[in-house]
Length: 186
Image 1: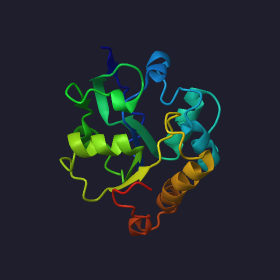
Image 2: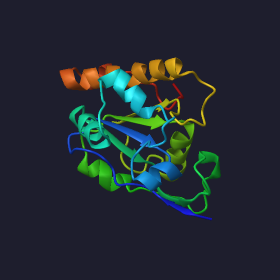
Image 3: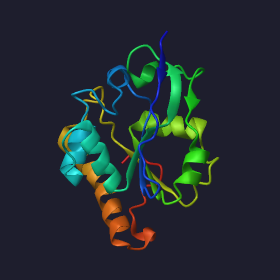
Image 4: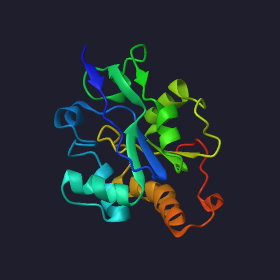
């Protein structure tokens, strides 16, 4: 069975939103790019919400300008293929969120790209790092494996959480006005 190794986080020190996937799929690992599969809708959603486009490096830079960070819950795990269902939980190792959150104290929202990311976070991280000031929101997976939901519906759900949060953070409005979706799938 092949070990899947995750990537380093993409984040500025002043990031306000952290988007977490579960673990990069094989295509992403091969290309060393977050959300590299051409049918993954992550980058299409970022373009629709924030106008993010261009080369991979340009897209990352634009995310950083929006104070959005990318990472995954797991740093490594045995996983044949790319399906989240194939992640071997016995070999799964989470990323170091305590260190990350100490270095990125402005994070106010953790958005989970899919239920598996949210479940893995609850299982392996829980509330160990002080998360009481950080809202969490589950979002529909952008993976092509989650085809049950139309792109337009995914986009609207992502917009409900991310666009309003980004606007609130950028405008300096009190954080209490950020939509609180709890830990529910949005």
